[in-house]
Amino acid sequence: MHVTRIYTGEDGKSHFEEVALDFSPRGDGQSEATPPSNAMHAFFTRQSADYVLDWHCAPGRQYVVTLDGEGEIEVGDGSTKRFGPGDVLLAEDLTGQGHVTRVVGNKPRTMMWVPLE
Image (tube, rainbow, N blue to C red; front, side, top):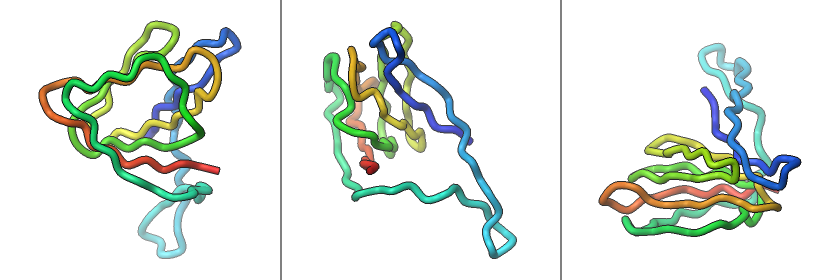
């Protein structure tokens, strides 16, 4: 499994990168887990079906998990990626041009946000 990371490149534009999760066996011998992240808290949002947020940077490092609906992110190099239920985004484009976020389809998008230290 992987998460999609958005980061700011040396060109000042945002880019996508697929990052594999680092699973290790747990003590129960039946499951695996990643190392813990230093999460500060979590919250949920819902964006309307016509939601568009023009160029912006992430306010801080954070995981964004789409729970319902579908969104599309456009990054500075011109590429786009869609995020549906279960998709995880690691937002780390804290400087530069940032990215555009838009809801696609005809229903709202619900997400869980997990800001990181």
